Image 1 (cartoon, rainbow, N blue to C red):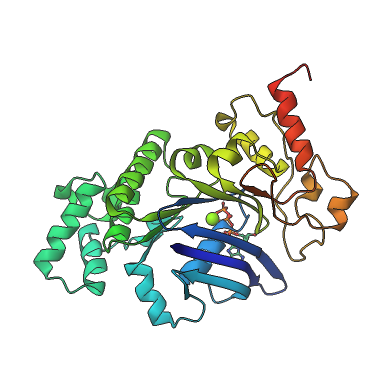
Image 2 (image 1 turned 45 degrees about the vertical axis):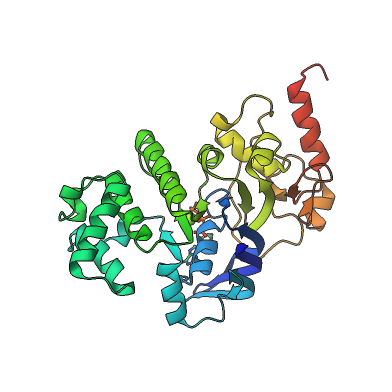
Length: 332
Ligand code: ATP
Ligand code: MG
């Protein structure tokens, strides 16, 4: 079954003196049981996409067009009450800044119990028991459940937020950069923890991260975003082993850990675009080492590669392939 279907989504932010298009015709599908990653540099529209799915965009954001469905239900036409229920009961959200999700003047235990009791008819005692179990599930000591957020380390607070998100046994967990800002050892533990829980609860994962090594460890399929558009989409292994869009190759360069030497490094200097005006050609053209006139004048459609289940928006996928092959064999 299809869990999430996003089709041709366009989101803009209206600012005082400008309109910023942050998501520009984005489409992707998450099937039940699949772990899906949205990747891309900062400002590529990852969080905006998640917030659009969750109905959590701020007031000055406008969904100009497109469809967002959860299990075939049209999310855009739901009332805010319907969406609120959906948010907790079926889709759990671990926000980018987890600390913001916690109330500093309430013990973490009280917050988890509140999350449970707002949505389920559970006795105080039942909620207490369940929140202690959740604490254990995320690897926290249940004896500390009556402490306040500031008494926990950043990594532990992130676990508290994960525990809260899982309280209602969601079908889909959306985690926005769940490990950013944490040290590497803690990052590994959190990721391991999310995966364990997910296996136990049989939920799917939409993971938002710019970290390709985390994606390699956790996800089956992915979309690489730039300027709110998909540059490359498909199975994680295919994309990481055979990146066919120069932007993806550049991202790998930023995370050399994911590059085993078979892909020549491309560097993509420059900044992501500010999209008050969406260019008519390829959005990556100004930074692209392969760019030609065609790239400036015509936007490359997202097209499936003939030889692999991988979709790429680039006029020059052949050059990416040649580059990979010459890197495999320096004599060619
Ligand atoms: P990061 O990796 O830094 O979290 P992201 O891929 O999640 O980046 P978004 O937060 O979706 O990117 O932002 C996409 C674009 O939309 C950026 O140019 C950003 O400045 C803009 N934007 C995001 N949130 C708002 C907002 N609340 N108001 C106005 N513009 C916003
Ligand atoms: Mg973000």
